[in-house]
Length: 198
Image (cartoon, helix red, strand yellow):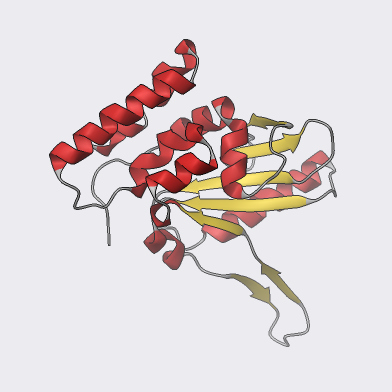
């Protein structure tokens, strides 16, 4: 099932992760999540760059390499693995690492190839598992129960055939909640995300 319309961008997710770091990390399953600093990394001159790198401010906990996936890409797991390996190598880090992919639709997860690299003898093998979240599998209530600041991801939870008037009411409600939960200077950037439904 392909959803129509523009559903988001890396920049919008980055803004969300910067302003609601703890909420996004809760979604990925990191707890406690309030001790992380968010930034986007471009790893040297390579063209592999994760959407988000979250580093524990205290040095205790997993480094989280996150990718928000809103389209069909068979090699998304490979890109995330490559970004994770490059990050560890370039930053000289060997601590715990959590690669996470947040898919906006289940079909995008189904398109992604399993990370399974092995030689022809089968003696040497690299396999990868990732924390994977599919936003359309959540209800709006589940996201809000996890953390109300995740309201900006609520558009990914609505059925594609929702009545236009009902959707419009929801969008207004999400916008009101965003303005309530985020400081004024941040709410203008955040409120744009639900409006991307078109």
